[in-house]
Image (cartoon, rainbow, N blue to C red; front, side, top):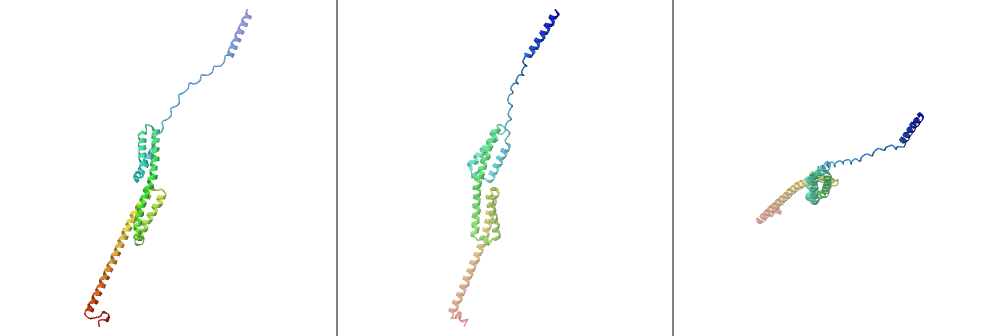
Length: 227
């Protein structure tokens, strides 16, 4: 009886071992999918806004909008759109401001060339007036100063320095005008002196002719030395 009991116990233990060995290990449950992380909103286009405003101020200071009105109007419109959407839709704001920057630069490129061409032509007209009056001789030092400023303006124009070129073309024009004025005054004074000398000569000649006539009328000969 005891032998049968031990045999049954051993059989039960063996069954338990086999059952445990045949049970597959449990797999960990897959993690629940996480929602995608929220993307940060586009940053405010501060750099673009500052650049667009700076370009607008430069264009307005030089008056270049009148030389390229279409691009100027478009630039102002895009700048306003960029300001309106700033902080609300920064991506749209950046796009508008980038367009404004490109358009303002176009105004500076096109309008700047026309602006300087106009100022150069004015300076050259004043220079020609001074040259016609021989101012380089009559007002030598001041003419040289004016010409130096004009040459500097040409160099600044070639270098794309619109502000300084415009300023120096204007200064050269004023200097040439001043030189021409002095040269004209000197010419007028010289002409007046010449006319006075001619008048004095004519008076002297007339007096000599009258005296000779008087001598002849009285029977004297001027060539006879009073004999």
